[in-house]
Amino acid sequence: MDAERLSDDVHLSIASDADIVAARQIGRSLAARAGCSSTDLTVVATAISEITRNIVTHARRGHVRMQLVTKKGWRGVMIAATDRGPGIADVDRALEDGFTTGTGLGLGLPGARRLMDEFHIESTPGKGTTVVMHKWCAVDD
Image 1 (cartoon, rainbow, N blue to C red):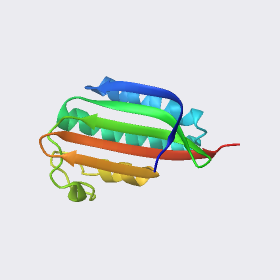
Image 2 (spheres, one colour; image 1 turned 180 degrees about the horizontal axis):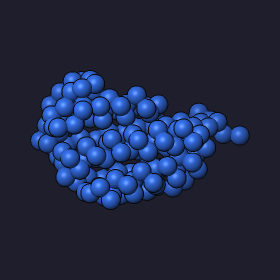
Image 3 (cartoon, rainbow, N blue to C red; image 1 turned 60 degrees about the vertical axis):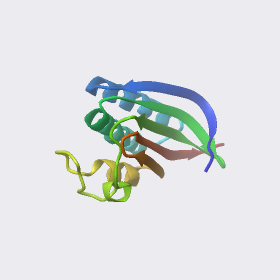
Image 4 (tube, rainbow, N blue to C red; image 1 turned 45 degrees about the vertical axis):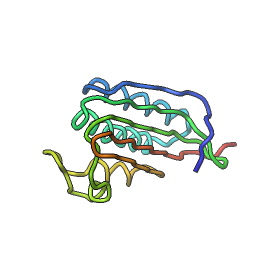
């Protein structure tokens, strides 16, 4: 599903906890501009936290792009997170609640998928992972 660019296009490097906090704040701000409810602002920030935490934990560094988008009369926010880390050998299993390759609870990817309206992940072992998520918030007037 193609989404048309609406305005802001933000690119952030992700390599630390401070970068995760910055990404959350910017994502909330963009979602507010898209017309998201206060509940959806929290949802967007939480999904960003989960995805960027995976970058820091598993790949050490990566990149997030966030932008306001519109599609079929709806406004929203798109978040695309990319890393060149170890990749995920079994994406389907990684999307199951409780599956983890580390010390976490295994709720990050499946949680982010549940929170967002659209969620797509591509991963190649040894090459990295890309997650693209959308939250649709308001109908254009």
